[in-house]
Each structure stands twice: as structure tokens, then as C-alpha cells.
Length: 132
Ligand code: AMP
Image 1 (spheres, rainbow, N blue to C red):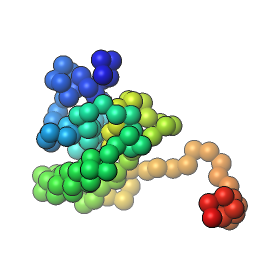
Image 2 (cartoon, helix red, strand yellow):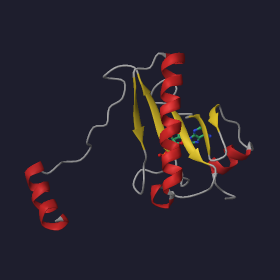
Image 3 (cartoon, protein in one colour):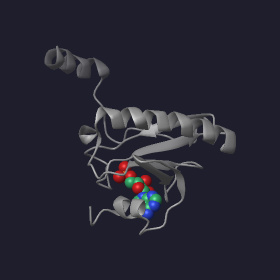
């Protein structure tokens, strides 16, 4: 897509620090990393988010994540991963991507609620009513 920053990166029109590439995906370091090695897994085909991703692509991405986990562990001595995909709220770049954040210790990434939460009993009451 013409105005998409990730399409431009994949085409090589914008420079990036590639960590992996194959026919289906391009992976590169995030310019605003949470931890060392924080990268984005981006399908080469422009799609919006996981709703538009075919099952085969998701299976492929799962395998890419596992390979990168091993590489990061060997190269950067990471001990784990946090995997994030923003869909709808919080997605700045409207080209499907998965954030792969290597983890080194318990406190290097935090995902804290920034709004008041209902009790889980109340939330579950709604879920039970609506879901089943
Ligand atoms: P999201 O908010 O989930 O859409 O995440 C978009 C991510 O893309 C952010 O973490 C940005 O730091 C990252 N990003 C934006 N432009 C670039 C770029 N030119 N190179 C690398 N990462 C980028």
C-alpha cells in the first residue's frame, strides 16, 4: 500500500534493521524498543490485523517466533518473550504486525491497567450471561 510505512520498509524504501526475512514475513528492530532486540514481525502482504490473517500465515508466524526466540536467547541471552499484537485500539501502524519483545528479567516490561477496573466477579457475571 502506497502510504504505508511498513510496506515502504519491506520494499527497502525506508531503512530498517532486519532480523529475519522469508517469502511471507519481514522482521526488523523496533525504533522505539521496550527491551534489547524488540522487533516487529510483519507480513509482506498488506493486511490490517489478525482478523485478515489467513491461518497458514499465523502458523508460519508462530514458527518464526519460535526460531527468533532461540536466536535471541543465543545471541542476546534473553530468557523469554512477551508477544503483543495491537488490534483496533492502540494500533498506530495499520499494517498487521506482532511485537516480539525479548525478556531478560521480571521487571523489564510492564503492562499495567491505566483505567479503573470492575471486579472480576462483576466482569464474569456479564461474560456468563452473554457468552454461554
Ligand atoms: P503499534 O502501536 O502496535 O502500531 O506499533 C507500531 C510500532 O512500529 C511502534 O512500536 C513503533 O516504534 C514502530 N515503528 C514505527 N516506525 C518504525 C520504523 N521506521 N522502524 C522501526 N519501527 C518503527
